[in-house]
Length: 324
Image (cartoon, rainbow, N blue to C red; front, side, top):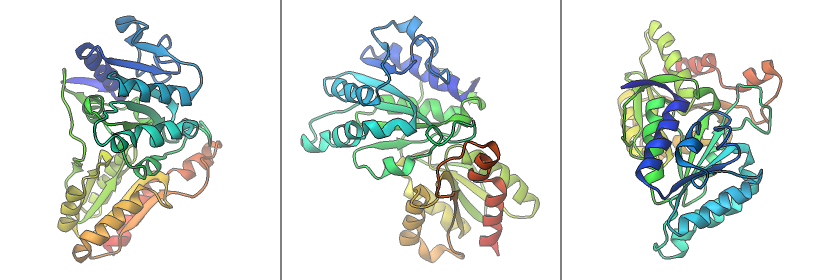
């Protein structure tokens, strides 16, 4: 095991996979000479050359579009969009082409491409560089949606994503890049659709995604001092979603709180809540509660930005409410 940051774990996954398979290439704005604005692709240009590590123009439609074409003819592109907010100009290429080709070609087409991108607030990047849009991608058939919360999960899930023959949207919260953790050396994969219990508990299930996993773990520590045992479940992939794993936790605790940084209205938590209500309603001893961001753009002002991001106290209050 090695101690790595989240960014270093992703970088290690890139290097291992590009060494293993010469059909893998990386493309995006500043991924080569600069090494990626968050350092995820550092050193790749020196190791693999400019035929496999491509700095692109500032045109997301071209980055995604060329990846779709390359994937259909046998290459395995890993593209980077600096910020998930920029996907709007490339949605046609992503959901109308990449997401539908296998279906429209009767299952004969493979689209082995990964779109990595950063998301989330907390660094003062303002409204056009700070959103969480995972619910958008969940709603588009043909895409797999991955959202790791730890360096260990980041490396294993990225290797799994690169080896997948379907388009994968890989979402990385900006506040996680510097988070450190133990990561196995060498190759390993984490299968999609397998949630991870980050903390065992008996009283309340908290389903948390991405950076909110760490908020949930901190809240669980404080709640334990009040005699409340919280189980923290990290879905890791939002599609496919580990419905069975979430339901099993709810069957044990009989209460559910969902926390995510994306806007609460029509967010991923709404789908999880609906799924549990449909399939495990009889096990619930309290209403399902959701904690999410308000329905507004992310503010630039630091105090307002912090008010926008769901807080540990909001989660603690929600847990105590379902316990009451």
